[in-house]
Amino acid sequence: MNVFRETLRGIVERVEGAQAAAFVGSDGIPVESFSVGQAFSIETVAAEMLGIVKSAQNPRGQALAEPVRELAFVTEGSRVLLSRVSPEYYLLLLLGGSGGLGRGRFELAKAAVTLEKELI
Image (cartoon, rainbow, N blue to C red):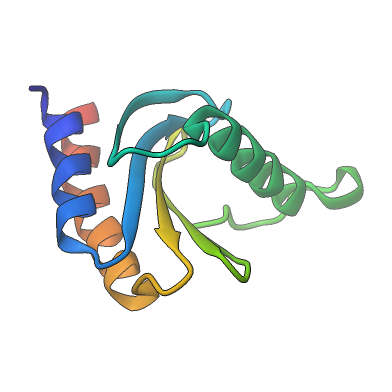
């Protein structure tokens, strides 16, 4: 297994309620993903989340001075965390409704440092 998939697997295993994790390009296309038996499309979730990031960074055609580093999207039944690794890549974590947001944020931040080094 490559370092990206191993990292994603580790995140899912360490975060309570985690269902899937993905290493996603800024275009919204997952480069690598790991899930535990979901009936959803990680590709669709990734594309939607990166669309939100692009909208937030460019409201009404005006770019923000700072890029989005983290994004949390919380609904009744699920939680999605997105964490920036580099200008071109993000980590995405999908949690069930009772998944640990704090632990998820911590694991994504830790993994972002590791994966950023792999990109150099």
